[in-house]
Image (cartoon, rainbow, N blue to C red; front, side):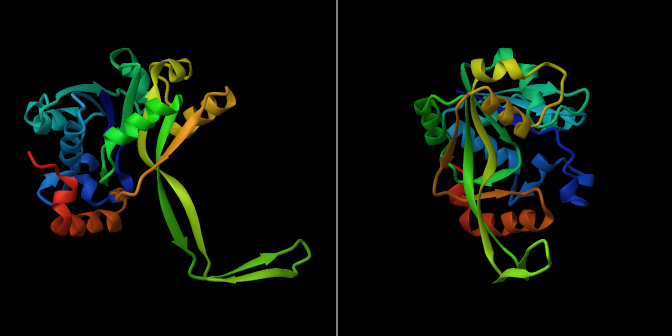
Length: 238
């Protein structure tokens, strides 16, 4: 099983922290968040990882080298210009297996990558998206108003429920290859739409697990609070 980790973003939502370090190198507890991800992937049986980076690749190489201390083989793919969240896949498609994992490098989760990948294989899907449930409270009274300005309904501080993408994907190489071109930028929503329009099945995987994207300052602070008391849930024993 091989994985591609996306680590080329600027992390603008996490400033001022990311003016010094790229987001995947931000420490969560004693380790960079990407270090936690690599340990989890190795524990799940993933032996080869490609790290898609931008101009800061030398910094990633200095920290992670060839991945040997994690028990994996780590390669690097450098973007000369921004390729979005799906574009980097095209750069390394010939190095990936028939089915492979793609994920963001700044996630704190207890997701079982092994179960996720096995579910993808069993589904026969072109693409499987790891999904998390989120509830978003609205702190206002929400009005439904018709075209004449007449009130139709009043909802006091409603809570909206969604399934959201965790930023973790499993893909079938043959299915996604026709929509990816080397050197061309593409984001995941565009790739998903291409698959759906062409009748390719896209599967969503749900698991009772913890998930947090550390892209915002408040979420980064929360991640550090959680890792202090629940470290054993995220970092496998060696």
